[in-house]
Length: 182
Length: 226
Image (cartoon, rainbow over all chains, first blue to last red):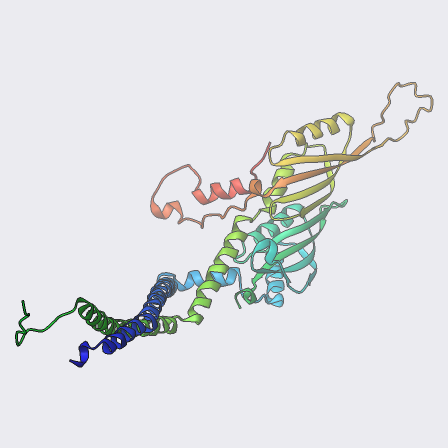
């Protein structure tokens, strides 16, 4: 038979070796690479799914579990922007309630303080007030009890011959520096 | 003997069998790896599609919103953790000032989120009082004395020019000095006062003890009285 001829056997051997070395062996290597890729994609997909689940949980907590009043309080405590005029009006109202005379109020533009106090922008108001010591203390107490921070950073009290004292103080409030998230 | 040439009997060589096995094995192996590779490629496509779907599900806007909220909470937490009561600080200064000593100027500066520096210009009627005042300041827990400086004696000359009365100080002596103090924010924390409770009469409770809110407010105003 033709298949048993010596030449045919040599050709069959050559084809077999050619198939093994030029197709089967490279394909095996390729299969290994594909398996590694599949493993990598599975891992990354798992990570993305994990992030998606965490995000969904956080979003649900944010939307459903936190009360609107709490969120409003948070936004009041650290707003996106500080209305200098409104804050000045609040300070004036506190001065009137504490029975001290607000001589001057001057505000400056916000300065970012991301290095020292996190992502917040500092807004400073320099006040000049006159009043009795107890009224000045009442005014400072009102600043502390506000629903957004009015921190006293600089306070100079000068005594005079009368009961009235002069105080120069700088009051600091903060806004949220949203640009950090961008 | 003469060999018989039997009809129907074929010669089978081992080499031929090996070659045939090798050939068919190579063909079968090629077919198998092709099929397996195709299956793996299909799986890889499925994984890529799955990853793309997962990525597409990711909501970047929500992520930014959550991150912004988290950062805002951290910032607010930081501010609350470093809040200080200037009223408590004034009360501490009041509590550490001897009755006859007068503060002519008081400067309070918040250096950072951990410390306040307080500079007080003090005026006393005698050295004994100045020494006692310094002792009181050094013994106070809230205020830490950094330095006592600018000591100044202002003495009005007595009416007798020969100093026969042996009095070295007149009645109008003024000893003044400057005290620099450091205050840790931790020690003058701002305490949130509890909202006012319903009047006790309405609750029909007879109790001489002050309400919880009143007690906390009182503690806040004068935490370091001597």
